[in-house]
Amino acid sequence: SDIGSQKDRVVTEEEWLQKWEMGDIGFHKEQGHPLLQKYLDVLLNGRSGLRIFFPLCGKAVEMKWLADMGHSVVGVELSEQAVKEFFSDHSLPYCEEPVPEISGAKLFQSTSGNISLYCCSIYDLSSSIVGKFDGVWDRGALIAVNPRDRQRYASVMINLVEKNSSYLLVTVSYDPNKHKGPPFYVPESEIKSLFG
Image 1 (cartoon, one colour):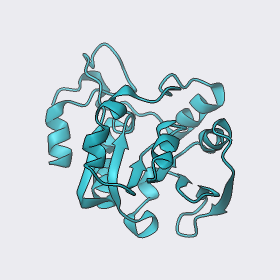
Image 2 (tube, rainbow, N blue to C red):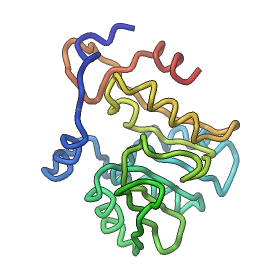
Image 3 (cartoon, rainbow, N blue to C red):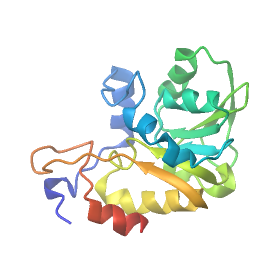
Image 4 (cartoon, helix red, strand yellow):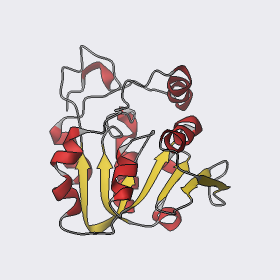
């Protein structure tokens, strides 16, 4: 697949953390993403009380929206600032505790228990730590992952989903020679080879 000059582009964890510190978070949507509302029925598939995973969740407002519908939401985010802002933006009380299986990781959980956000690298997660999910809302994770890490990312995600889960994935289409990313261009052919 031709992803142009992006193939070797690497955005470090420090750069992502700096984006949050500097408020350079144009990828955050205050109103939630219209595609989740449009395809919500596909994600839920007539089911209630689902476990829904938000990879690289930031402070996505959709997490509270789905939790308010009665679903259990789990996210992972590198930036502790983003996680804390999520809870303060929604005036949600939470508790914070270490994750024994992952060095330096923290779990932030709403006191209501239906929103759990892991502050760590997504590559440190496994189903033995977070369980399996009925649904995934990947609004900006795959397109934020460094191109060379996509296979690793897909492997983690496949490990985290139940057999009959729904996986909503948003990508962006553009000429990758004209923008260095992120967001990165992920051709449909590559999505098929990653996820089948």
